[in-house]
Length: 302
Length: 337
Image (cartoon, rainbow over the protein chains, first blue to last red):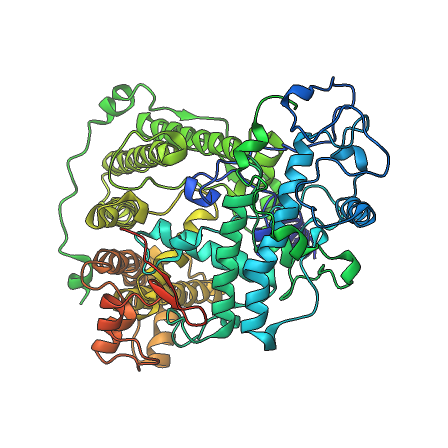
């Protein structure tokens, strides 16, 4: 009897002891980021520095107006808008309403982006927020709306908003990366390259809570032309590349499928109320807003 | 049959002088104080631990092994941003990926960790082969243990060295890490058209499953006849109606053929080495004989063909890219190789 008890203890205690060490396969794609070894896994962007965040504005820092646009005044009149670049088509009330949406979506207060001594002052986080506003509008008009139009029977109601990615936190969920779309070339150049593709496929599958045949024909895996979900996936993949290379600040973790999808076939945090949506038409018509990520690191005023 | 399986009886290889043995190897000592681990008694197995013969080859092997583990842990620390807790917690996910191309002396993150660990690995298993040879010489034994270990080395070196050399890039070798080589097994199969259709893989599985079956038959037979003292093999081989004799009769009357207490180990040894030798052929023919085992199997009539895949489709028309998005007519070119 004693050996049976001992065996039972060993059999049940060993997995429990290992459970804290060995990552379960199912949640592998959701593990905290492990800095990629290879530059290809960083989607061509510099590897993220661990634990780097863009925090709230330092209110004690002195204001340097010499580095600011001319539209930033030293003093301003209440009720009048200054230095509005992205939300140009909106009136005062609409701008304030949008600000309220952003604070809810990110779980932050005004001082996260604004210097409360001068709300028109351009701080680093405010510059990022401006780019994010433009990104939301342009991604919607460039990628989301065409896909919903072309594959209308797959479309759900709701638009992309800040909350779709942020979900109430300033730093959206970070999971394993997917490779840039041009690396999906098959057959791969090497087994290592094949691993990037396969791992990316697993990341997509776990991000959407689906399996391979959601997008693939199981009898003919590499013929991708005539499966609607596969075509949608390709366009979404290129959208992700677009977001990462064009809009995101440097030195932060890359956006992946999981960032919006969160384990669901459709992003579950879509914005359905018209009052909560990003004013796409008002924003997307102003491409002069800087989109070069390096601009966020410009010296002065930060 | 027995001669074919075991080879002719050969003279033992020339032994060292016994007096020379313990003085030649400065580390050739039996170390430790033997003791009994009473816990093992609960599992009805032998309880004594120690002593152990060290030897230069063995200590060298252990040193290489520990050095390799250190390199792996350094990679873990690097890949978790120097966070010690994360390095331990996600140790299973740490991967040292091989470099692209055949060069050496890459920076750590572009393959240097892998190169260092491969050198540690090679040193460890080769030193262990030296220890194996040393011990066999000491006991004047026939070198079957060494041959078996060399067979294992032939498979690992085919996977990590010879096949990447044939393909012209270390990137075809498995990365090092707990999950990394498991990932390689999947990626390698997927890349080369599913290994289930590789006939050498099939043969290796035959040997592997056969090995487990023979182990089961042998172990069960000996345990079953333990009550008739079948563990006294040496005496019982020549005795009628002993446990061993009844074991042999059991299998002869069950399946018309039997091994004896010697030849069952021939069977096991050949199935064990056959597993890895068939695997070596399967690895080295991948990418050289064919680049797609499924297509190979279709061509040779061993599987049915599904879908529209043909050899020409695979080789001449990479379907994924370049691609034309039907709705927009946009052309997505293939990346330059």
